[in-house]
Image (cartoon, rainbow, N blue to C red; front, side, top):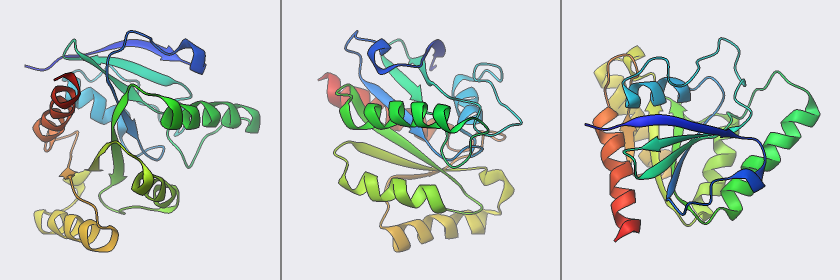
Length: 193
């Protein structure tokens, strides 16, 4: 049985936890289903707030996973109904986190299974090719596709972008939940031994 509990929201880099726990972050466009995925992983529909307005998350939200490591929800990119100054502030926080945070050991990159990588995702894919950590690619909202189309999405991501470690995920049905937990705990074990 896995556990996931909310710990804190961080707005400034200097306020990040310094307890030495390994961290895995979740990245993706606004409205790709990050909050829904967190809620499904936690088996708690109210843990992460789901907004009808994309771009609501403007902080790094820390969740304690299995009482051992942090799962960090990054602000979604691609859409944010806020001022340019605020976008620049949390954009800078995310960039500093991704490039400077030594505790960051793994990244879960989300795509909408119906569309695959789009504009901001492509920039993220370019960055991830140079990144040193472990990456899991998760295709969300898979319940909206037939089984045949899900397989085509995986094949397309492998062939077109050379991606490995792909999980088809649905917050509605629970498809992929065990695979995501397995990957996260594997990362924790690899950095803890």
